[in-house]
Length: 348
Ligand SMILES: *[C@@H]1O[C@H](CO)[C@@H](O)[C@H](O)[C@H]1NC(C)=O
Image (cartoon, rainbow, N blue to C red; front, side, top):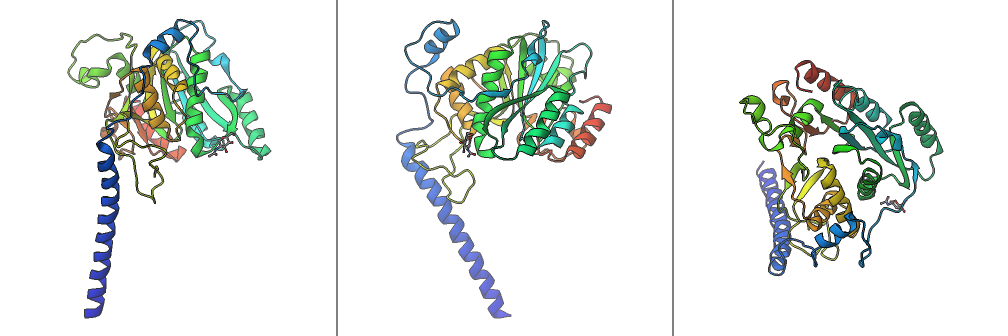
């Protein structure tokens, strides 16, 4: 009895020492570098260059990181309509996630949810280098739905930044008539109704609905870039983490402010700025940090809103009343159930 007792204390002791040492390790790195840098920041202001590019002028400094993979399917007819499109869902999807795409088309991605609002949905995928069967299935899907954008890079989790770059490139070049874009992952729940309400008055959402305060509604917020924002989080220097990053890769003590890449909304103008920022930002394998850097270069400030959930918000009917987007919907059946219930309750 006594021996077992003392050995569990020993384990607890070891565990605490281990936690303490790893904490110290991360802290020591952060501390020693904090003297030299706080946040990452661009070495020269990029805004003048972006303005020149937007005006169609020749610039002396060439972009460092343009999206260069050819499109195998580009579904450009999505943006062909003469009418202005209020909202486009640009869904980052893994090639093999056929059932998730079906779930999204039948729930929040349904383009005819509201008869008086133009909505579009597209899915971004890469290719598989060897599985021709997957590509055959995808081609069937394309024939049926015409909502897939595919470029010829290997579709894998660690190529997420490429997929994000593709999204910016594609929307910038082909979708001039879209007012707002929601970039979102295929494992999210989204409420289209709340998304549209949010866009009517982002700063006062959802209070303006609750208190009936009449504010400047339906204005076009041309500098909008919103989602769940991390203001100054620390890079993870813990070797065993999935998000471990070496000092060579990133020598600064803090990340730039960034929006969780799972769901963020951009006005057309912010999209253009971010696109130009991104082609002057070196490739970085974490897509949210990459966008944070691009946004800082383009001088667009991310706007935080708590109703974008970067984790999964525990479900209950009332609790989801104002949710705009929530992560963690891996199961399309669950997504359908939640969405149907929220739609019936008037929240989706
Ligand atoms: C990303 O895609 C490129 C181009 O297809 C490929 O060479 C590379 O191996 C991919 N990277 C990862 C981590 O899958």
